[in-house]
Image 1 (tube, rainbow, N blue to C red):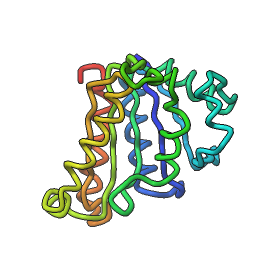
Image 2 (cartoon, helix red, strand yellow; image 1 turned 30 degrees about the vertical axis):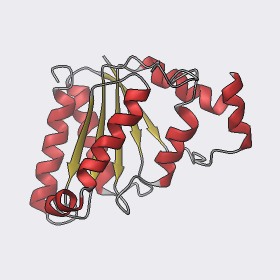
Image 3 (cartoon, rainbow, N blue to C red; image 1 turned 60 degrees about the horizontal axis):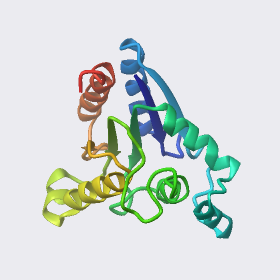
Image 4 (cartoon, rainbow, N blue to C red; image 1 turned 90 degrees about the vertical axis):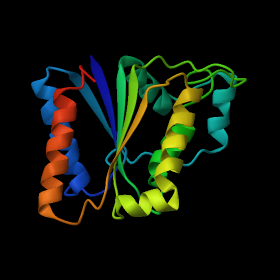
Length: 190
């Protein structure tokens, strides 16, 4: 089992970083191979520019090929990011734009997904409550978008885990860290 984690938070002392460490601890105890892409640490350029259009002709830039190789290596992809302004940080959206390219992630005509992963998991922290996400429709919208993106890429098994009000209390943070540790430890069974 190979798990690719795409980590998206600029602060190395953030709660998201603690979540990453809990996930890695669980994966390690389960003897699961994992690799981490830290988009901020790598200073990933999220801007889809004119050169990126060359991917539509089959010419993949070297800096994108390395991500394609990591995605191909993985059985499961886990995206770990905060929700800011009811969405992901721009760097992650840009990663989708530039890396989930035609001919690699989906067919040029959009009729067939080309990725064969067992599962994609999104783990997202929020400042708002579950009630706010439910009543505003944001929770549903996030689920629909996550599933639509990866369905186009050929993956039907997409799970979204929202860790609501992540900054609210130490007790809640401890619970979340244990939940994510357990997720990593039991990833093979999920």
